[in-house]
Length: 184
Image (cartoon, rainbow, N blue to C red; front, top):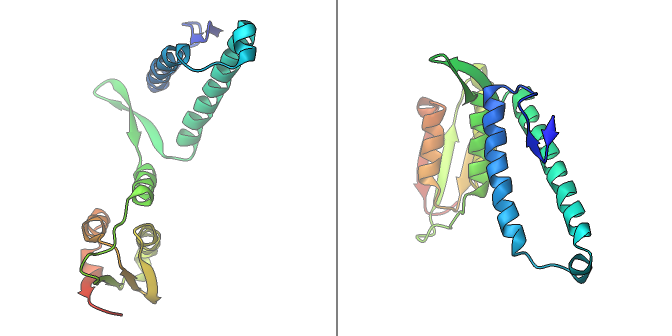
């Protein structure tokens, strides 16, 4: 049950969900403080009720979207709830960690190498590790690598450190060779 936009104690939530709601409520209250100083239209100045109704509707819709997000993360295996030392906690699964890594690599600002050299990556990952091979390929694309030949990728960007971290994360050192080349 909700009362004035807040969850009441009549509805028991798992501890982890309650934590997420508490964080959401905190952020939402910050939004209320900011809203006081937000510019208003003439309609909102002349009829303040319209602004209040609109704000209440926006809050309700935000809560629904947030609730759907939490449900989506659980349902798709990005987070799990576990008992840790008699307390419940939210753990990010391997699948969730992979998704976070992809987001991080997508947002990474890539700069071309100043020395005009290219990074080359060659791999030979066995068929029984096909999943890791596919993960590597998709993450190489996010790092700005292009396919030169089958299992040969090149990049004009300075992403050596990120590439090495990716290789270490999935323990692929023995299957991959990295080169710095002057021209293709």
